[in-house]
Length: 439
Image 1 (cartoon, rainbow, N blue to C red):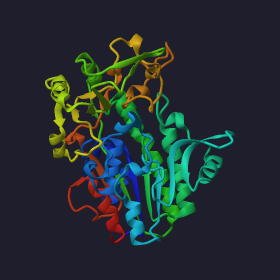
Image 2: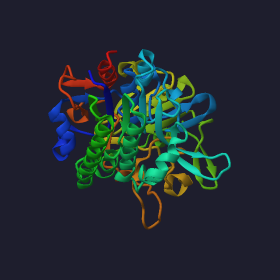
Image 3: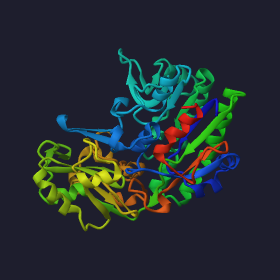
Image 4: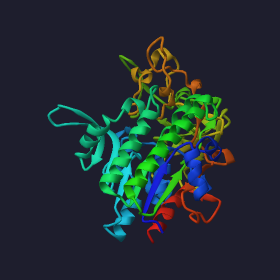
């Protein structure tokens, strides 16, 4: 058993990518690796909750990267606090065993307010006197000031949007080394998002994606060297989990446009364009990469909703409540209907039928007001100086049920004997970590 465990969460990492990543490949050669099979939906927030609880969305309630709070008619994308996860996570289970089993959590989603001893995650925080904006939530609160003074402000503009690049992941890694030196956590969970960008923007096998492999590997090498030095002679197990893979796409589906054309979705016209009317719409879709939750106000309309999607190009399955149980997605937060994509297709949130009527935020990087995930924010229209409204620019996606080998990522261990099988499910990561501490 290891004295310490460092879990690196690396979305988009594939086994074949290791050929271009000598530092990660070295970890695998020293220890071992297995294919990682993500649960559905294979997107960031659910998969991270799967890995840290050992349970599926049916149990922990994270059914997508966002939530529709029916009672308030509000969509919340990305910003939910940790109490949205309805089951204990690794750090909670470690604390139950011993207060000496301390944890640090660095940048995974939904970590604000979690039970880990040390936390850093992106979330702009304004001081009460309005004197300064901080870019991260930290525990302890004053930690961000130390990190800012040491490494500069977290480069939020490089974390997402058309300027997303290695600088944000490098800041995460460098600040994590600082935390390892300062707090010596027994378990350290670190999210390194860099491979997400180029693979979605230009395709997982593009030259841009290939370049990102080398950039990330250099940062991982620096991270491992720094944390190993901080921990000294302590036996440290590094686990690197690929979360999910990104597959090439050449087709896009617009669920909200289909619902609108069927007379089920309503809009409100405002000064800056057409806005989705969550109160009066009979059905609308919260889209998320290769699936969408369709929220249906009246159960009598479910059949009409199903008919909107069955047989549409790019649609793989149309799941009603009973069908969702097959994927353990049958939670009260799920839509009455869930639509999944074929491996080569993805789904865009657009509801307007004329780009001239798009709401103002559609052309901006605005991950919170858009009721769905928008990877087009990775692109920029230099002529009009805005985010384009061309969803066909996206060349890679993920999230659909993993039926193909290409949808399996990889999990690496720096020591031999960690894996009992050549295939590991994302929900197995929790028990792999706990086992290292005799739990």
